[in-house]
Length: 239
View 1: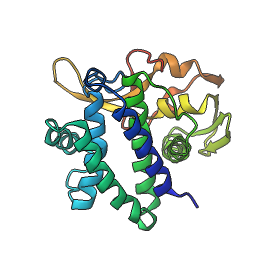
View 2: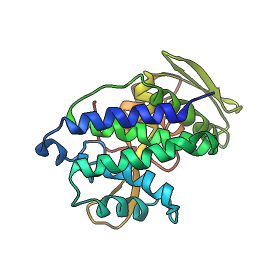
View 3: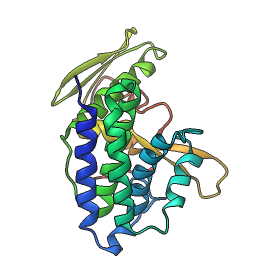
View 4: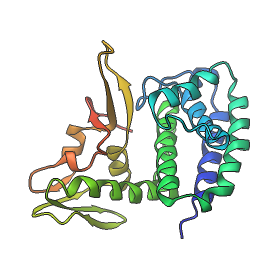
């Protein structure tokens, strides 16, 4: 059985150590993968999620307005205040994770793993690419991809250094080989606003060009690797 609490707690500890070692200039940097947020804003979002869960503040969960309130409420906090809150509220969530639906804690862990890498990108401190949170994120993500393969009449075989997974039962046979970390970053994304603020789109951490460069068998099918609420980045992101 996956120990989500231990995995999330280890992630929280890693991120806390990272940002405690950063100076103000680094904390003010906008993260390359989520450029509308500074490093400190991403940490505020992570802490805010746990605080909202414990407070039962789940109206509009995961929407832009919900996440924006988390960041705005902590905008004037120093980083130590944010980390102290996350330690307190995060520990409460970890204590009940075993009793929560696996799909929910899997999604939460996947989101946290995504944002850890966003923070690392902003601080230029790569790492934790084979941690348990990434493993959970890829496994959870592959389940989401199953929902893309079926309506596309596809059977999708995904091969990474950790093994092979097959989703879908369609006639269209698609195979792809990729580094597990790159697959994880291709699947996940972040909401952003276009320059005219006329529409909102979910953008991923990897571009179509990067996804097409994976080891495909037959015609590349990047649309089968990106969560349906996201679209690939318009430009490549190398981390």
